[in-house]
Image (cartoon, rainbow, N blue to C red):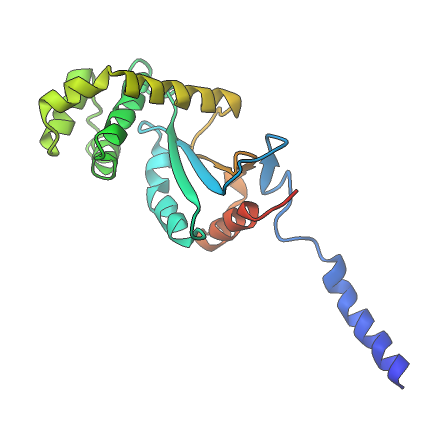
Length: 202
């Protein structure tokens, strides 16, 4: 009797053992590098000119709340949208970071482009948005072409090229796994996928 019970228990567990994993390479994510970062991190590639990035802002904010303690969240602006203003707004993000006003500037920039439909047409327009939101004109001028901001911009471009980012929004996990956004159907699934990749060992 005991052997029969063990056999039945083993048979009941078989479907669980052979069930397809919830997230699969090539379906939910791609492996873009053979090795990952030493510490857990999420990097979001985006552009202020991207309407999907604008729509993804609240989703990204919810994702950040679900991340394990100690996980770095980084944003990497790309320059391939917005024509000649693409690189200018990429630089604007770097300026906002350097001046520690990014949480204030990013919503304003997205709103200006996608809600008000009045995208900046020049650096002066970008500067005016910073000034209107509490940044001193001289602080903007001192930062925009600085060595520090130019270094950040160069790093953004290296990341975009190294990981062959051709569309945004894109989420890179641990410098190794690129989320396939089209496979995601809910906030909960997105959060679970990112957290799964953060702890993935192979």
